[in-house]
Every structure is written in structure tokens, then in C-alpha cells.
Image 1: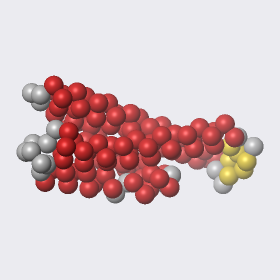
Image 2: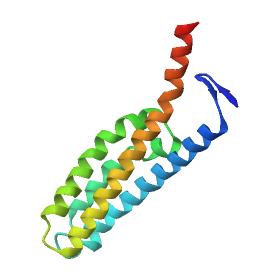
Image 3: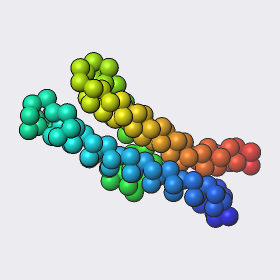
Length: 139
């Protein structure tokens, strides 16, 4: 067991946090590449791509915080991710091409998975703080 400023944590909690952080990082990187590939090659609005590829730029804002495991980034990034999840869910429902519909469904599902990982990681980061405050109240 290791002691932290927020209370004791065992190796299982540390391993779980480590795995969740890396899954969230891998999903965010995959989603950035999928956004760029979608607008340039997979299902562009115009042949050869369009300026909509720039919609991947806001995803670079939380990238370093997610990679470094910063709690604050895990708290605000879900608000950004919700916009992308909704856009791709609507896009997959309204698209006429089979490829666009399938890609939209895959991307909306990946966004939802990333959102779930962010919420779980933020919760894992907050649990020791809540436990420490509960211990302070008892003492």
C-alpha cells in the first residue's frame, strides 16, 4: 500500500487508474486520426477533402492533459466530447451512404467509449479526495 496526500491507495487502484488513463489516451488519439481521415479520405463532403478537417483541432486541446493524467482535464474534456458524440450520432443517422452511416456509427460509439473512460477516470481521481475528507470529518 502506498500513501498519498489523499490517503492510502493499494496497487490494484493504481493499476486500474494507469490502465484507464492509457485507454482514454489511445481512444483520444484514435479519434483525432479518425476525424482527419473522415474528412480527407473516408467520407469527405467534396472529393479531395474540405476545410471541415479543421474540426479536429479542438481535440488537440485536451490531448496533453489526458496523456499526463491531469484531473482537471478529465473534468472538462467530457463537455467537449459530448458535442462530437452528438454530431457523429446525428451524422450517422442522417447520412445517405452506407459507408458514411457505418463510419458515423463507429465514431459515435468510440466517442461514447471515450466519454465513459473520462468519467470513470475523473471518478477514480476524485475518490481518494472524498475518502480523505470523510476521514478528516471523523477525526
